[in-house]
Image: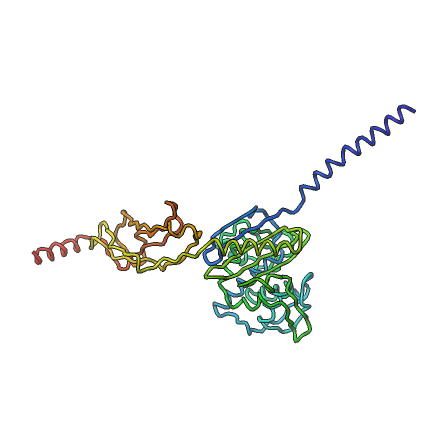
Length: 378
């Protein structure tokens, strides 16, 4: 009997000792939390908390689908009034959708509404096929564009973002949202709370509560899934600044909106977009070695802007650097120096100084001609 009791006791001890180990294992699968605040016009990262943690891309991938559509519209291959014929593939999509029928015709305008307001998967596929002809080519284009933008932790496997293998981070999403924020044509779509498509057959209601109340809001997207919990990509414009806040893995449905408001309010209050004046910059001719001319006239590229804290405005300094290794031949547009802007001796922004004329390389004939001309002048 004692042996039986001892055996039973050992079994229970084994079971109860195993339970904590199992709980610890499950805790490691918890969804992480991540947020990023970025200034959208310049793509400057202002704040980040676990911003490089990987998440399923899910509906955030539709922002890349939109970006590629807008670039196709810029190229003239599509327009908002273009009519798309729905494929069987688009019709077969699951999850969020507007229930497109195979062979149905619908405008790009309505498809954009369907993915900005309703996160519709069938509309995303229809757009992908309109841009690239098929989903595979479009997905390859998504990944290529992500690489160009520096979204190095992002991988797309389809235009909807809902299939396995779609991976991204809050930092990468902010970079994508920054690029997309340059398209003012999308603001009316992103800020629509409720609308219909397909001649009123399908009603769409946005899940982005920010568009109802936040001052200066311009978009972009809110969504939920079990793998990434409550997520928000919000953008707003005030006083020349564009704030983009990305929140991933928020357990509370409403806290993501509260947090986004707080972070963007801090950004708007603490930062300024500093735009240098071209008239304040005087560029001298730059020395050239081995050329028919000893110098080349130069100018600066178009001046952009950069972000500084309000407390740093009085500390902004400018420094002009001329390259000392400029060798002929020199062509118009070649870089021959830099204009650097510093804050407390730290470089914050730089713009290239470029040649504004051609300078040929010195050869025997040109050297003799130059000597002869100097003799005549003497």
